[in-house]
Image 1 (spheres, one colour):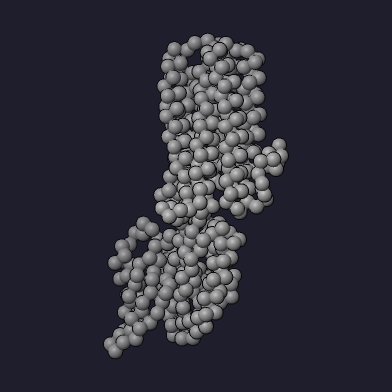
Image 2 (cartoon, rainbow, N blue to C red):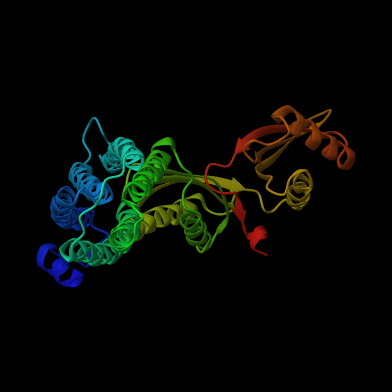
Length: 398
């Protein structure tokens, strides 16, 4: 069924790297979700009103909130697919995140209202009219949500959309909540236990919990969440696979919405190599990322002196010494400036976020180690933070 929908509604469906094709996938998933969730809402709400079941009504409202989520996500995909313009040179893909944030707020408001209604039903329970039609609608809802979970997960995996993968998980959770409502209805019918209000409370709490989770998921990229470690590892391995590259550092990945990733990185290459040759390699790396990974990569060339054995030995020694302070600490961009009375050892030192030592204390610790091993050397240190990954070099691979 999913494959048939893809072939019917999406042109060039195999070219998922194309942003227009990706948008078409998202829009199709949105319309399918709206249709299914509205159908489930109408059927559940009617049967809930007729039977007097607050838990079924709550489950119906949950489906309505899912439909609202699909509508806003659809608008997010539509607005996010707008091309870049003068005012928004990085595109409009973050509309998808903003849409998700709005959905989260709506879900939490609905959940709080349902919590209030269900609490009143617990305090003043009323009998629930049970019928096998009611049971049949709930079973049908479970089957539809199971299909929607598979559908959204497949589409999400195809276009690498965390939004649709989360929607798939939400559909899976709806199967659990609707199953709980069905069990409550059957138990209430065949026993003297009226679980309707209690199950309504559970469904309402589940809706609120889902809203909190969605707030976090949508705020993280807007606030500058660290990139996926798998993406960082891929970037490092691809860069290091090119001949002439000795190491990388200062990798930064900027998320301007799904399919709109921009990155910058420093690449170390031998200073003795021909500059034009190094520049050509860097151009090829940037082109590789753009064409094959849809990643706009800007590379800064860092020449590293490899012919001076003294500098090489000091770099290797210092790299090991800073790790005695903290295993995550690294150094890069080391250069030596000899003087009459002393030699300046200039380098950057990457320290972890929320490190227990202040920047001043780190510099003092390193200077003390250097002075003990190399008298007459003065450290000129720039304290750096890791924005995406620790520096990577040929030495760290060996």
